[in-house]
Length: 474
Image (cartoon, rainbow, N blue to C red; front, side, top):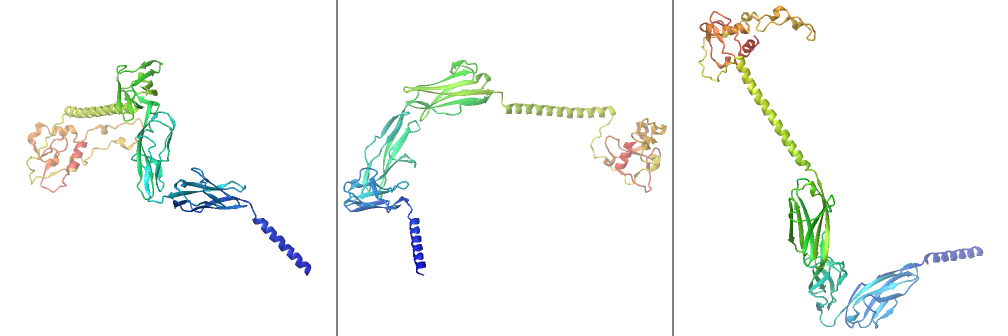
């Protein structure tokens, strides 16, 4: 039993030792600032403290980012102690820890020392003029703004009448005409209105022509406009145009170089514009056009490659469409006129007589009834059907029977004789629009002669349409 107890104690000691070794892992430091902003009164005690988590433990090193550490300050473990702070102690302090395991870590604390007396609004010092001249193309240009106040003011820059802010000092990697303008230094303190001081950044130098498309395509017969936008201070003394044709010929352009060319110039806020207009454009105007601006500081130029194509497709389409429509309307009008005159001539040749549209005919007598019997047309109101109608319509060598060529009993020729002037006394004309159809004469009825009879017997009345169709067939 004692042996077992000793073995058990030894095993427990081994387990405890193993656990202790497992948790003792080296780790790089992690630094936290207990408070990132301290505002203290002048002459009071201040303790700037950082918290460090590391394995193994490490010490903290302090430094001031915007100046040397105060001599009266004392480092104590993770703290920096100031017995009596002054306005010169105001600034940003950094605590840094490094235990040799992994990268070092740090944190920053801002210290703002308040005066014993009443607080003061921010005041901007005169470190720049109301107007600052900068040479075009200059690099690493900067403006610094300084201000005093209690509490210490926060300083930054912005463009006038905008909310676009820049850090202090105001710096430009390269000065150009887009940099030119009015800027404001803004100093702000807690409890006071912002203090503002303006300055104008004036960029002077050689002309600078703004970029754009280098190749322009246009159509023959259209208008071409080339715009040369020049930024310059002072203004360019001259803006000239030159042209090199596709054959290599170089010409300095003027207003009368070729037809349709117009050269103008206008002044802008940033300099001047040169405008070249060609109207209309021809294929001979193709080539490279160069705009050159010059002032006392130098020159700048820009080229335009102009390609002239054939006439616009839409113009050709419109002209073609108009021609097609005109031809179509002319043909339709000619066909209508030809048909109209052809019908008139046809009527004149066939002897048709125009029947005036006059409804003022005397009424038909009430005792008169127009009837038509089947025997008037040989027992059938239709013409005799020819014998070849029974044959195959697609058969060849069709012969016609002699009876098929005979005229009906009341053929058209006999009916015309019946209606001729010789039989006028023997017929009675009936007026009424109901019997007037097409170019036929008004039907007549005869008392004893012909195929129309007057009777008092009740017969089947002949409808106008059927009678007229029967007459037309015969």
